[in-house]
Length: 205
Figure 1 (cartoon, rainbow, N blue to C red):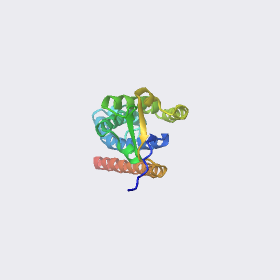
Figure 2 (cartoon, helix red, strand yellow; figure 1 turned 180 degrees about the vertical axis):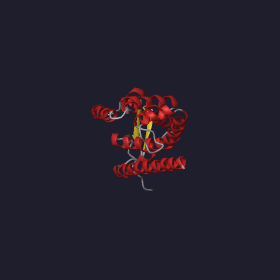
Figure 3 (cartoon, rainbow, N blue to C red; figure 1 turned 90 degrees about the horizontal axis):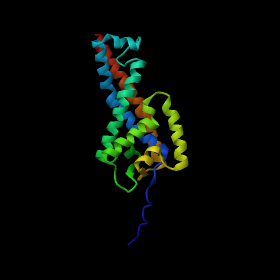
Figure 4 (cartoon, rainbow, N blue to C red; figure 1 turned 90 degrees about the vertical axis):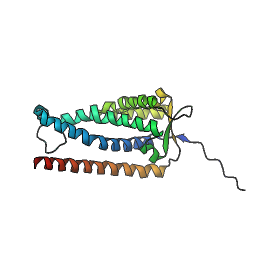
C-alpha cells in the first residue's frame, strides 16, 4: 500500500485572482441586469419626453452619459452586488470564484451566511468600487492593494472576519480565467450593443 503525501493546506487567494473572479461575476451580472433596466428607462423616456432631453442626441436604446451613469450607479451595480450575495449565500460560492478555484469562508471555517454576504458586498461596493462612480474605483483599488500587501487582508475581510482561500487555484488557472474575463467582457458588450441596436431599428420601423 502506497501512502500518498497529505495535500497541502489551502492558502489565501492572491489579490489578482480575487479581482479576476469578481470581475467575471460582475460582467455576467451586469449583462443580465443592464438590458432589462435600459429597456425600462427607454420605455420611461417615451412616457416622459423630458428624460430623453437629458441624453442629448443618441442613436439607440442605450441612454446617454448622464442617464447611463445614474443607471449604473443606482441600479445595475447595486443589484449586481445583491445578486452576488444571494448566490454566494445559497451555493457557498460564486461562478467567478469557482472558476478560479477559490472560495470564501469565515475565519472559523464556516461558509458565509446571507447577512455576512450582504454586509461584505456592501463594504466592497462602497469601499473598493466607490459606489460605482466612474474614475474613482481605480484610485480605491490602488489604496486597497497597498493595504493588502501590508496587512495580508482586505478591509472587508477584516471587518467581517472572512477569508478567501485558494482550494484549487494555480497560476495557469488564473491566466486562463483572465483571458476568459477579457473575452466575456468583449462578447457581452458586443451582444448588448447588437441587441439594443436591433430593438432600436424595430422601434423605428
